[in-house]
Amino acid sequence: MATVASRQTTEDDITNAVVKSIQGTPDARLREIMTSLVKHLHAFAKDVQLTEAEWFEAVKFLTATGQKCDNIRQEFILLSDTLGLSMVVDLISHRKQAGATESTVFGPFHREGAPRFPAGGDMGTADTKGTPLVIAGRVLDTAGKPIAGAELDVWQSNSEGFYDSQLDTRDTLQMRGKYTTDADGRYVILTRRPVKYPIPTDGPVGAMLNATKRHPIRPAHVHFVVAAQGYDPVTTHIFDYDDPQLREGDTVFGVKESLIVKFHEHAAGDAAAAKGAKVNGPFLTADFDFVLQAAK
Amino acid sequence: MATVASRQTTEDDITNAVVKSIQGTPDARLREIMTSLVKHLHAFAKDVQLTEAEWFEAVKFLTATGQKCDNIRQEFILLSDTLGLSMVVDLISHRKQAGATESTVFGPFHREGAPRFPAGGDMGTADTKGTPLVIAGRVLDTAGKPIAGAELDVWQSNSEGFYDSQLDTRDTLQMRGKYTTDADGRYVILTRRPVKYPIPTDGPVGAMLNATKRHPIRPAHVHFVVAAQGYDPVTTHIFDYDDPQLREGDTVFGVKESLIVKFHEHAAGDAAAAKGAKVNGPFLTADFDFVLQAAK
Image 1 (cartoon, rainbow over the protein chains, first blue to last red):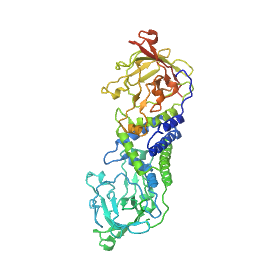
Image 2: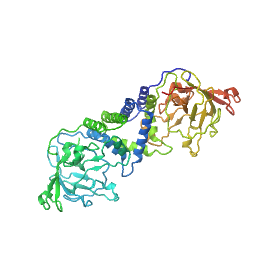
Image 3: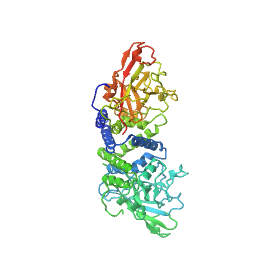
Image 4: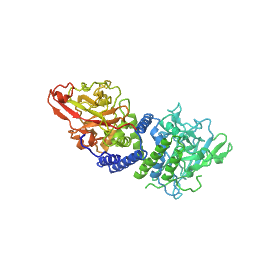
């Protein structure tokens, strides 16, 4: 009652009331997640003594982030990536046995339906300006045994730093391919040298990077999902050792030392280095073995 | 290099890298907020060992929340309200001197441009089924001195639990009004008895409430922003003491004991109780004094 003096409600009372309200959640895992989320969300607001004006800026930022998303743009993944959350989840989710290939961010640019290529097949024909790059190696288990029939789903930007979905020709799949290992676990990919590129900065995430004086650049890399029956698939990249951006940092914190690979130069016609890929002119090679751990 | 054995990256390395990346933020307050946000966000993911599938559900949930927003629907405010964050921010932002009227959530239903009424003017004419309610009292400072010329911006649902923006006639302002205190700090509002109502449940927030087995109901209340020159404005409600929903809880955690008010019944024609408001038939009265603290 208005006329009765009562103790004033505190912010801790609210946290306790919200946590209590979700204790009836039937799904125990959802209950655990929501309880932790509420505690951390409230603790954040209390730690920084968030003002109403700041809270409203956050509401507007999150709304704009959602509204920037469409069938080829996922601004919330970009936000998660640039805040390092994606890499934290990646590390939690993919604890590797010693020797297994480390994972990194999936990113927002994967697309279904990449064409299948035989060993040495060229997934980079759309990129007429790039330097040919042969990526080759084996897919192995953690004991070093080759895995035959492993599938590599490969995608990357072109030599100007754009994924196909960022081009006017976005309906056409480009710079993507699927390859399968042979009986010795070997694969050979022909593509073009990737370059560093900025993540899309015309949305709320770009504004956040700008306000925090962070660059939007990812060092040059090729994306892979490598999968084989009976093994944990790995979502990862290989990074170009000679890209100076590696020293400037990756805006999504995806670089791991074990994923940095030297690209070697070869003169035109070096058939041994090309490993069966039909390359015209000088080219590069990158050797990388993927090591999968057995499925648990 | 792929051939060099290196220690594996950990999730704590990522948190440190992200925090370091934002230390160049020119705005010290933004730097403080972002640093705390990143630490809490990562700590949450680590605490619950968030899986990639759960992370992706969160991405989809937040995207849908943003995309549910339009010029009359703000799903992120609804999310903040139902997770108790709005009340935490309210309590942080509006620490009151003893005796000053406590604040509560602003909510998503305020609209600009409510019509001005003289003392006793009827802001509830659109609601032909509701019971007339005269809300009257004074606006005072914390020493008990009346504040003349204080403005009360008042809004509420109709007697069926809908705000004007939820009706087919949403372009017409209804159940809203602005009133000004007289030389003795007095105000008289004529409206209709509010009822409990569910917040909108056809979006992601509704799905969240359902999954956590929470009800979506707010107990019956009238919204106020009370402002006067030289004083901190207060955003608050009065709640109907006789609404049984008060015991079932408020889905946005907005109830404070000091804001619960008994509505008294009166027979038709009780002019003294009506305080100058032109009421037909039996009616209710609620007496409430708002106490503003001096602006700092």
